[in-house]
Amino acid sequence: MPKEYTKEDLWKLYKLLPKELREVILSAETASSIRSVCAKNEINEKKIPSIAELVGEVLLGILPPDDFQGALEKDLDLEEKTAKKVALEIFRFIFYPVKTSLEKLYKTEVKPPAKPSTSSPATGPLKEVFSKELSQERKPEGTERDLYREPIE
Image (cartoon, rainbow, N blue to C red; front, top):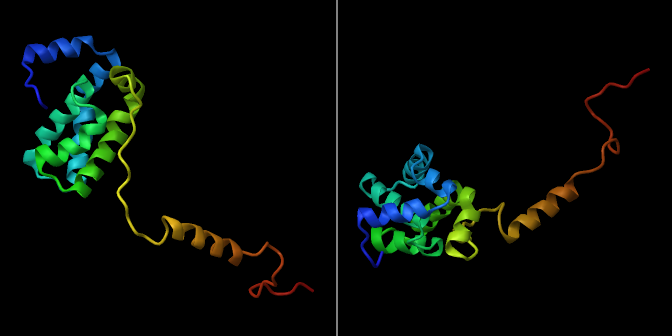
């Protein structure tokens, strides 16, 4: 945050916000989401208030959502991969439900950060290969003889 804001400045910004964003800022659910995202990503508990502050800055219109991940990396010294995961989950649980209000506030489209790349066999280009193989293995019902049934006479 390039400029330091006083409590009075923050309250003025808060009062200008749409009702939906004001509710999210003071919501216990928001605090709970931040805490669970941090726990899931093994973030040191001492950093949770700073992450909550960054979330508040986004909701107040101070920090653009596109800069949220960068702020996590720069201000909190999080690794890029961890910051990306945290930013993605914060976007999903906190920013996405109020996406239209944020877009009006920032006068731009709000997009989640790109998903972190993972190489698992069921995702990416291999997913298509596996799904084709599975669909070829399946045969229509009734075309094979059922070995477990006894013939009826």
